[in-house]
Image 1 (cartoon, rainbow, N blue to C red):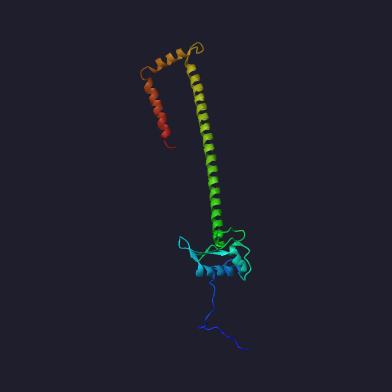
Image 2: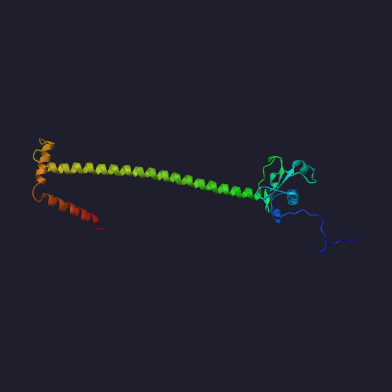
Length: 210
């Protein structure tokens, strides 16, 4: 029995190109061989579009007549590898002229969509936190106003009682009478200076560190 071994000078029969990247893709051997057939047809009989990109339209009838099982999934026809575009015209379930996305492109698109979804969720959470903070701010402002009003009411009651303690028969005096008494009292010499000194001392005491 005679054997023929391959040497460096051995002339190979016509071959179809198959990118090394195709070997790592999770697709069937039939799909890889079919892509090699499409790529070979693109390189030998491809047509350039307006952007200078090669493409080939492989009618479904020719695919059916090829001595290979017909691919079952669109993933068998990547859109682009090595700068070429190859897809069958009217492949089942894929549309007559719609290019089929490469599996890696689909994974990248899924990752991008997932990141966008996470970003949208973070934005929604941030907007919800902002609305809660604005609501809490309004509540605090309302509480401050109530406290200020209560403090003023308490101050008026306390100081009104102080004033009545210096008046003779306050129940028979009118508001106009009390106002006249206060005007005359504060018009006395030195009264305004006494009040100013008291205010100055209190303000200075507030600014001192504890």
